[in-house]
Length: 372
Image (cartoon, rainbow, N blue to C red):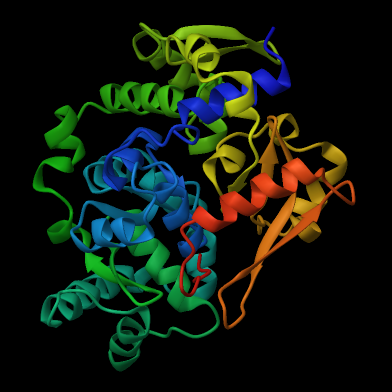
C-alpha cells in the first residue's frame, strides 16, 4: 500500500510540479488535460510553475496565440485546457452539463433564448476588431436584442454557450479574459469527429489515460469524480486506457494507476529535494484534481484551506508531502510581502526560509482576477 506522503510526492512528480519539465505552457496544459481555472491568476501560475521558464508572461502569450483556452469541459466548472482538447472534451460532457442546468435556464426564462443568444454572440465576436470581446460587451449586445442578463443570467448564458461549444475564453486583456468564437478560434482538427472519428469510447479512453498519466497515481473513481462521467462507461474504457501504466497499490479498494517508473523517478530526485517547501496557487490541480484531499491536508485543517467550505481554495504552502498552511502576498511599494499562516501556529526556520525563496520565484500576477 502506498503511504500518504509517497502518494502526494508521486503525484507532484507526475504533474510536473517538482521538476517543471515542460518547455511550453501548452505542453503543461496538454499533460494535465485540464486545470481548474476559477481563479485566473491562480491557473496562470499553476501552468507557469510546471514550465522550465516559470514565467507568467509565457502563459499569457500562449492564451493570446490560441494555444490554451478556458472553457467548461466538465462538471460546470471553468478549466484551462490546451486548445486542441476543448472541443472534443465538451462533446463528451456538454449534454450532461446542459441537462443538469436546464432547470436553472427555465427559471431564468432563458431556455428558448439560447439559440438566439448563440447567434448574437458569434456575430458580435466576428464584428470585433480582434474577434474577441469582454463579457460586458456581449451582455450589452444581448440586452440590446431583448435577452436579459440581470440576476445571474449573464453568467448562466456564457456557461451555456461554452457547454454547447459555441464560445470560449481566448486572449487576455489586462486581468480580463475575452470571449472568442470556439468554432473559429479552436484548431480545425480538434473536434470529436476529427480527433477520434466521432468515436466517444476512443475519446474517453484517451482522456482517462491522460488523467491517469498526468495526475496519477489515481483511481477510476477519481476520474469519474473529476469529470462527472458515468463510472460504468469509465470502467468499460479502462482496459485500453491503463495499458502500459503501472499499479501503485490501492485506495479504498480501487487500483491506483499512474505513469510507469514514478517510484524510480522519486528515488532519483531524492527525499530532500522532494521535501523542500513550495507554494501552491489557489485551486491548483495538486489539491483540486482528486476527491481525497485528506492525503495532502489534515482533515482538521481543511476548513482553513477552504474557509466556510464555500468552494474557494486559498493559496497553500506544501512541505514534505503535506500542506502546512496558507499564504498571501501583501502589496507594498517595494514589492509584495510574503505572509504565511501555518496551521500549527508556526513552522521551523528552515521551512520559513524555503517558503520565502519559493515566494521570490513565484509567478506573481500584477492583478489577479477571480471568476467562475
